[in-house]
Image 1 (cartoon, rainbow, N blue to C red):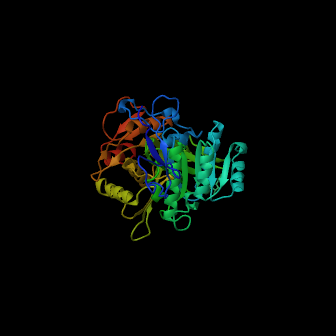
Image 2 (spheres, rainbow, N blue to C red):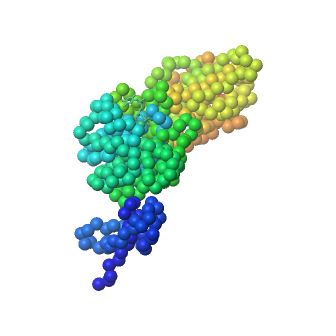
Image 3 (cartoon, rainbow, N blue to C red):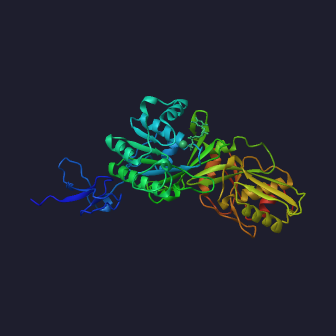
Length: 450
Ligand code: TYD
Ligand code: MG
């Protein structure tokens, strides 16, 4: 019989090495590697400590291993739930609702018999309890640990079979090996690296919660992006209830995916029909208000775009935009001015995306143009109509990606016609009104005279 093979495993972080090393290359601990036998992948009944090489054709994604958080919007953004050992960074501005989301996910997991260890470094266990009570969660199924020392957290994680772990927040942790105060780059990096290694070796999904500030970031999220598997950003502002959860990086699912939530008195509610939410208070037959289906990741959302064009008292009229790029609005105003001779040079122009949403795709151009022109003539856009298309500098209307998905979403929400770029599409779900140019848009659909 062949001699049993051995390998060396770091007792601190679980890093494996084929040969002995004085210092662990992963967690930098000195003299921490211990020899242990490599168990063969033979069906001896014992678990294999490593994955035997397989032909790629046989390597299948074990979708069944995904853990559902009980929040469908969150699961979708993750790419179908939590993957084993996946390290996910959840970041966002203070107060956006990260802790609330995590606690609700813990409760969702608990309902499926899974235990999440919620490590709180920001709040006391009693404060977490108060929040859980406010959210109406079953306290007996939630586990909390108020701790900031990484060594202690590692011990707690290794001591029991947790299904998931969450650390709130990574900026509060300290680790003996690193210098600096909690929140300093070295502390954040080392703490995250140590906990990630442990999560990987135990195949326990780990959440790291991190704050960012409006100005960008203090030590934290940016520093960790390369270290983790998935980066989620939670966005929204304090005045408004709407919250968007975006996957910015995802080794286990699509990026650009968005989950939509609403902050209520009872925590975060999932918004199954975000388009309806965006359009909820849309004024009937108001000039300057139009609807455009905008892609958020793979998903179209209907958004209301408003424009107000009014005579300016100023020598240099204002061009202000909220939720869309001001430069884009200026460019589209110039196209209207030059190509259809719409007098705008002495008008203030305000453009706003309702609900605090942000639009960064040119597919909204046609809607912005329609809103500005509509406000200029003070005439409402046709009923139940959406506008889709990019506008070029020559005033031409250009095609956009995902046209069918956008049309389906519009039809689903009760819109009956869509002004679109030229080009055939099979079996459209609503009436199409193709336009080649901004001129054609104004003449045929906004009531301008030739
Ligand atoms: P929190 O989860 O503490 O934010 P973060 O961890 O990102 O800093 O939530 C902060 C805000 O959410 C807080 O201002 C209060 C509000 N909130 C509600 O409106 N409803 C609720 O049920 C809860 C728990 C919080
Ligand atoms: Mg918090």
